[in-house]
Image (tube, rainbow, N blue to C red; front, side, top):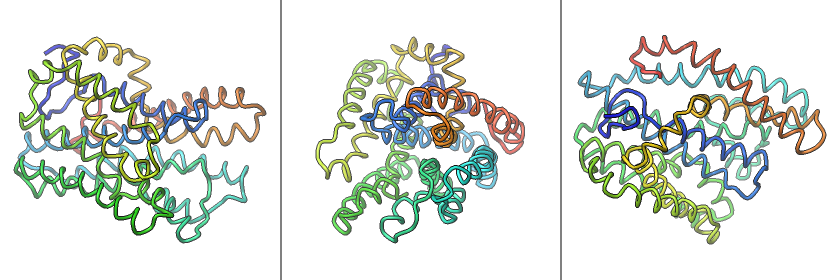
Length: 359
């Protein structure tokens, strides 16, 4: 197996090309939030993040189960705490006082508390339904972290309880179908708020992560083999790529509010399988491993946390779209890198003590 060839069965270790996809996901979100390309759907970047999270976390959990005989739930949650919370708190300690200084009228204690307790998605659909104050736009992206954390709470115990491969596969199929049915129900029960609820509610967005878990399970069980991927590698990438582009089109309001996330996540999975595992795309994976691309992908979490608060602060003091966006991009890269070194990189040894395998 070459350095660019990834193992299909669940295993610890670096997945070649994954950091490049992480960078693509965060770049889509930043480009949309900075309005560099206003028509670009930033939600697609979030769906890509969700898929990668589902794939990678389930891959690591199953690898741990293979090595140790069972998933250590306590250690898993400690590792997640060490990985995710310190960068978030660092951003909050700096950004919230700064936002209050420049936008005191938008301060919302409920938004701040819920966002940093991984309940930020509740604010997004609670505001139009219950009349809550929405608060700062700069920390709105924390809603997606809430969905991911809720997923992390649910998945390990379910894998711990359901030990057979077939039961796990069917569970993920049920999660995908269930999320779609729930979005359909929301659109029928509350059409006025369906878009906000379906986009932000945990159980209406679990399917993107479930697709990622399903891919891990199918690969690890041998239902999808390396030889099969190599035979249709180009088809996977081209069909998946075209389907991803098609999923971004606003076909109808019902498609946008209800149906979109299911075909979009499937398209991501098809493309992902080809790019990450097909032998024909080893050159693409080598490009994704260029030091700059790999590093930016590795700090994608910090880029996601900091990009919007930095834009809000810079836009308050700098006049003009181009100067504000240019300075914000530069500062985001610098601050995210420093934040990564102060938190994630420095705490890598602690994660290893609890069974982690940080790269």
